[in-house]
Image 1 (cartoon, one colour):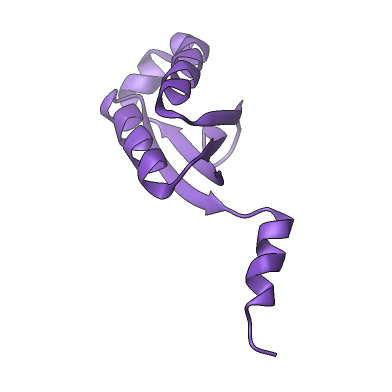
Image 2: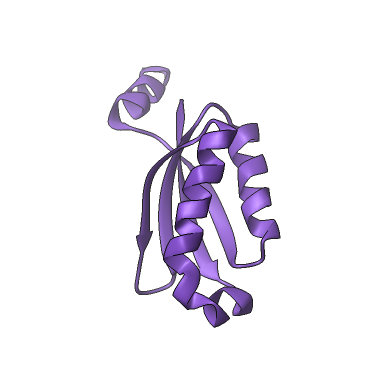
Length: 98
């Protein structure tokens, strides 16, 4: 399973309905389970982004389809990044020429 970090900002619709944000997060967790994705964390933040989420998914296509489905609801705009653990990064570094 691959790890993904998602940075999200509320849209105008999302901020108008901010009181529902934790309920929407629960719905995201349920939709993720159905898509074969594990929600590692959903955190609300101050600063440039309103939310930071971590998901574990089988592949890029699965997490992309999931992100598009969430975006279609109109409450957030997201940026998704493939995230590597220390062990994964060490395996990548081991491939570099000496």
